[in-house]
Image (cartoon, rainbow, N blue to C red):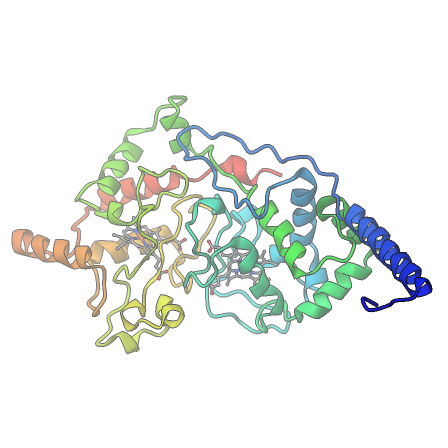
Length: 364
Ligand code: HEC
Ligand code: HEC
């Protein structure tokens, strides 16, 4: 076309160019979504919520993500949704130690609560294998022990669904969404799962007093006595985890070598042997709803969790050095390797942990 010399060809090529431009303009017009920015609350005592500029939150995107989260359309036999394992009444976690997917295949880990997720720094899943929530959402749809639906099929289902077609046009300017827009919508919804009305939040805001058992538990939690604060801290009330620390081995399992942990955790992702047996430090929010506990759901109650810490860390090559150091100091000073908490102190610590549970979060 570029080398056409006669007039007829030139006009023809002008015509084609014009047609192409028109088509382009038409396509462009289709990609203009009509959205309303989603109002992000300013929460007292919280750092500003980090929202990825690549996925700004909109009212339409959030509503769409919510619909997808509760819709079994994303599972192969259309029987389970994200909410089947992330129960809203359980702070979006599961009551089973290990959840089951569509073919009744049991997964390997405990379903995590979904709360204040935006503040987790670039680490989702117990082993941190996803950097963002939208990357995370790619996994459960295809996982054989979860929804087991290949993404190309998931995309077709959504594209052929007239209601979703319209909703995606409104929210993302496309009636043929791919996994990119689908997971972006889910991420936007997950970002709205905000919890900040636990008794401890209200105490921090000066709205209520806490009873003396809770206050004693707080002191145990944030002092050398309980030593919880090396990983979980009240200084960052968004999740009550140390913002500078993401993963740890909290001494739950004895292991002669790093290859003896039943689940390699972070090590399988980084390939670094020293990361084997290390897991994401979980939030302390809503523990009253999220039993059972730990990456494999091994503890049914908070009492069992506290007893585990009270015994002191079990030995393994990469148990958090500070835990071993403190345990050795305790052993020298008191002859007890463990924390040596009395029954009352354990009850106080539990009362404090439960003061981080926000019952307004699970109201319909
Ligand atoms: C069959 C049960 C099941 C289903 C269905 C399921 N999940 Fe999960 N979810 C889990 C389990 C188990 C984990 C932890 C897995 C791991 O760490 O390896 C998890 C982890 C997560 C996390 C990580 C949270 C954190 O703090 O790191 C997010 C977010 C999440 N799921 C969202 C979703 C979304 C969105 C869907 C639907 C598209 C979904 N899940 C479907 C069981 C499920
Ligand atoms: C060295 C860091 C570290 C210290 C210190 C620590 N934890 Fe943890 N905590 C973790 C990690 C990591 C996990 C997840 C472990 C796993 O599942 O493999 C965890 C899990 C928990 C859980 C279970 C949460 C859930 O959703 O399953 C509770 C409750 C808890 N810790 C409370 C405490 C208390 C109370 C203390 C102090 C007595 C404490 N932790 C000290 C790192 C730590």
